Image (cartoon, rainbow over all chains, first blue to last red; front, top):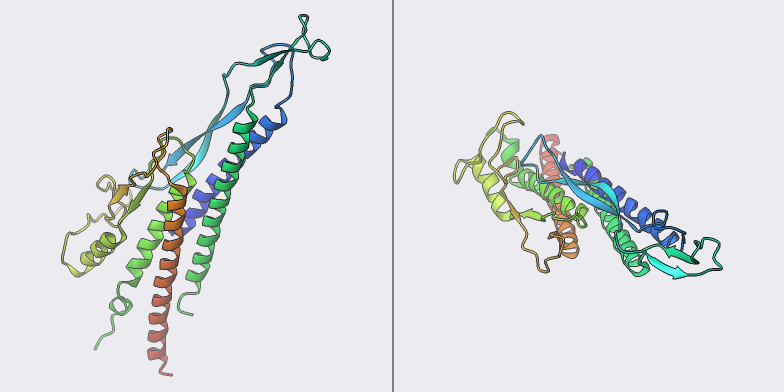
Length: 137
Length: 136
């Protein structure tokens, strides 16, 4: 039955969005994690979503979602002169992560809205299925 | 007069099956609302129902019949010969995604209510048949 398939579709979207929320939380938590060198500084991360079509049935239009990977932002790191910081290097500089807090907040709201949308879809399908089970009663 | 259960139920089983297929397509659109390059799809319910009922009564264009799920269907068609179309986006986005969350959600809700309506009609017909069989 196709309504059962909605549980897979909406479920995969919910898990993908929860990965996105997790990554956003990690970015926000590390927004001020300073470091003494470029290589060890935290970089903003972002999940990459991909649609998964049924390869056995090429005409099946439904697609679940998977997280293909998590990429790190290549935006330049900010260098700050802070000789009193315990993480400062010999020249007295610390490197700040390239996390943009405004971007992350927007991402967080978008992810939580999408999660809610899919939870709604799941609930509606569940109600319809339960009503279908009671057909003719 | 022999009683044919299929004709007694009318087009409601077909309508229910198509509503179910459509809700799956719309759920897939909503699930991929944030996937780059995903193109939203939908089908014309009226045309699909007309085709599904024409196939059984012998008039109008016939869908390609297959007796094995691994046989191929023409590109862009579902199992019952339903023709899928891509949605034209109102506000195209930079990442190539054409899902409009609000529009899809409204369509999904509308489709769910119409599914419930078809289900109620079908349920009523079954109740009517049961009443006739029991005779009470």
